[in-house]
Length: 236
Image (cartoon, rainbow, N blue to C red):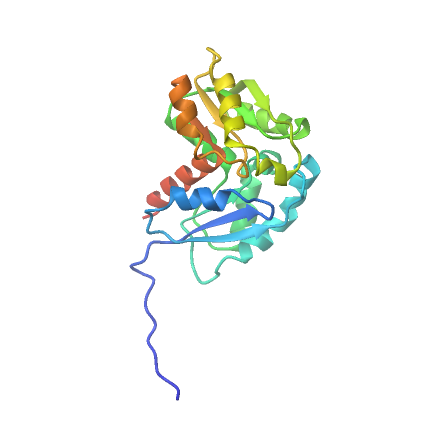
């Protein structure tokens, strides 16, 4: 038996958001569920091929896959915003290039990434001198710090776990992150602490660190979620 049916309209539904995350990322989806727990916006997620280690070469190689990953998002919808979930790749590939590639693969009004989002969040809370905590090796840290500098943010106070393997980054203990961030944040010259990397667990750490050092503390995933919400609201 075949039934007739009617199609419902998307007109009264909020435009969905999209998220492109690394194949190796084990953290961002869980933290985004927490960040968007009460949101009515749908978030469609796709993944992009990425190396088992975070190196400049593995980050650059993602550029050739961005368009294809964006194409895997539902083509029937226009997105209010799409987030590209890699801080270090954003520094190396560049925000404008990432936006161009994503928009060539799907329909979206806005594109953001953790580096751009962190820069905008720093402006929002009116800070310019950051203590930067990173899990990366030096060949990745250098372009990241340069990118922050180009965006007017000072990262002279800096610390790293120096880990290249993604599966280890995803398992760096929250206590290790808290201890390192507090050490950096206690420097009197810094106004805030930024914790980089979407694969590093931070959501349970931010408040504890902030309470200890009495300064703002933000992270890649927190900044990206904040910026996506802000850009999505602008498109209403």
